[in-house]
Length: 355
Image 1: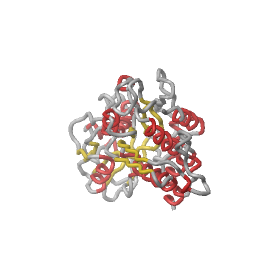
Image 2: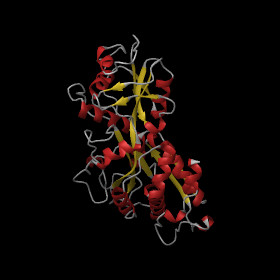
Image 3: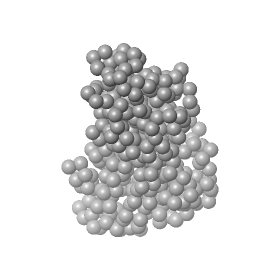
Image 4: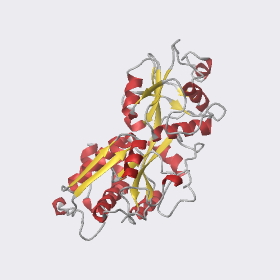
């Protein structure tokens, strides 16, 4: 049902990039004159959403092919910079020092890139502990587990915040991403902001602590946790699957990851200052109400493409992704939180400037 809802979306939602490339008439999808192939690479967190967006866009525009390879945020940024992808998916925005004119293979020589927030999702803390289907974790305890300071599930620090749970005497295996990951960067940012006395490592897209178990991609972490015993990990909530999910937050205010909680935290967070016009990055307030263990995933595109025809196609596809209908489709299929009306307006206006 979720996919079919997405497939029924009107192609009139796709903002036309130029007069020669027109999206389909809603009553006659075959009227679309859009054609070509788009290549995207990046965040594995958006895999389900991208599959939904691609299915809808290609159904309405039958001469368009969109490929998206969920190889991780770092791989996506590297491919985009080298000109190997038309757009990147990244669970963090480009840093200002990364975003310089002439630094991107597919962009015009005088063009920098723009960061466009298109996907908001809570990060779930998942675990596999025989006989335990409910678990509370404070930021301090969570940080101590992933830092390697708490190594057994029977530790008093875990027991104190889970008085009604029978915790086994079992070694904890903390699973982290092996690849460069925006999810890791958001997770370590949350730990650094909420448990600074414990998590003294730098915020990083590469796992900064020795020990634990490493797994590639979101799917790899989920597989390692669900296939192990005494395991714990972190993953985009939309891909947690059948994994058991912990409640996280200050003692007495433990929260499950929900799209509503994620949206509330992002809505309370400011835009990053000092960015170029149309380059939109959000500084997530990890103390915000809601569920601030959240990630914002960005589509990274050229402000101006070397190939104007390709730029026009990128513009059409990203316009659909950021539209109210595109966001609703991702919410239905991936459980993401749609952009707020005000943020969506900013993002669509920025996309409309792509050349």
